[in-house]
Image (cartoon, rainbow, N blue to C red; front, side, top):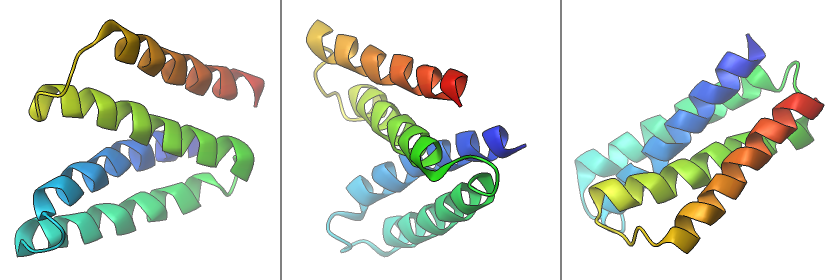
Length: 104
């Protein structure tokens, strides 16, 4: 169950970053409230996962899902560059996340 919790926490972390972008420096109330909700839920699920997963693995996976997901979301929602170098580096993050799962 801990691995499901860490996946949920990572996906919520993507929501944190997206809502942070839309909050425009916390000047917009709805995206700011979404940011707070996503952050609290993300940390809650991270804390549940860390009951069984070592913090070094759990935190790495959580930040990796958030980082890779944010880059990919930025490419889709915000029309950021889809340069092959960026895609290659995101693939490296994803491979690292999978590797951490297998070594734990």
